[in-house]
Length: 472
Image 1 (cartoon, rainbow, N blue to C red):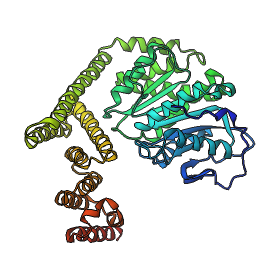
Image 2 (image 1 turned 180 degrees about the vertical axis):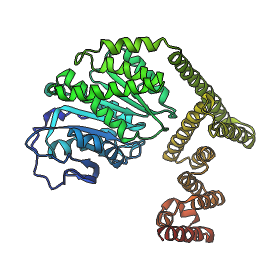
Image 3 (image 1 turned 30 degrees about the vertical axis):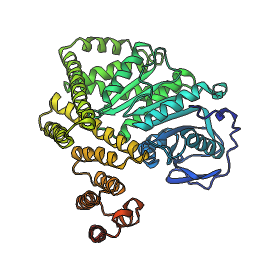
Image 4 (image 1 turned 120 degrees about the vertical axis):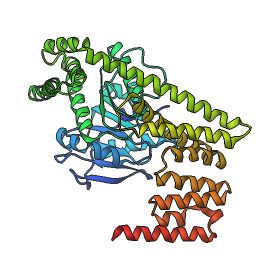
């Protein structure tokens, strides 16, 4: 996919700005395409007298505010422009290259951007977009003005290619994933692959699942990119900043070791040895990492990681085999009961208070199934196969039975497929669970087949009453 072919051709004519600095702006409309926009954060001391590093961020559901909010603290501290696309999403309604080029065109024209410090970031499907953009930058004419992408931050997913890189990448990679994210394994394996070929990378974990990481994780990401920029010469070395970040990481590693968090200490000592190599003397930390690597605690933790990986793979094989059989089953109702039973069993394991490998594998597997069923439903909907979309969403609702949005989506698919009864039942469940946007229910064209039903009209009123009650 040809993305951003003309980045190097911009003359960086920074225009006079009416946009406030130091404040998150939810929607900036592209000057040449009013149908496209992005969320924006300009650092508080932004002026056109200098050039600023920029992070282009991509959310899987075109929620540009999500990444901008997460990066805001880091951007304020280190002077970055943050741009979050409001159009790039999974299954976009226009070509992805068109969306990205419009955003690059607009921001490169409006703002004073350092061509040598262009970063990308994304979450889930947005992470794959960020990776594609970084790779495209590395191959584009931008190489003539700064060497392409300065780095990529991948949250909740790796690159779009299934095959791991075989030679060092031309940009550093920072990966981050929730411990219960089904793509944690993918990013962990990418980290190992990049380490094996000597490609600059870092991988960190946070407590959570398949979602944007918290702000402190992205502060760590930006600080790591600052170190990489000093190593590569993209920015001048700053001895004070190097010392500050070195002392910060060393303090965290020693604190983990003192608290007997041996595995966490090992990861941090190992990271220090790699991240500050060439910037500080790291022999002590490399030796410490080697010592802890052979400890029982670290070996046990690595073994647990492998066990969880194999358990998740097994659950996935079982689920998707059953899902495939459902398409050809002589008795679909019985086959559906089997899948629902499988999901129920995993939900029980996922709800366990015991922090076991089984619980971790169950939570990761359920997250993977949920996303997969939603993506499957989106493909069916795009092909106007509404009954098939409803079947996929029914399984998604089994996995997340407390999610009102999934029942609302199921109601839409059922209505489009002509199943009025199921549409009304799903819509009722959505309202009961907290879907209170009465205007969205009343104005959604997908409900044309049930618009004259008395039950539909009552549900609109129920949603409106609940919304008013919540405001009191």
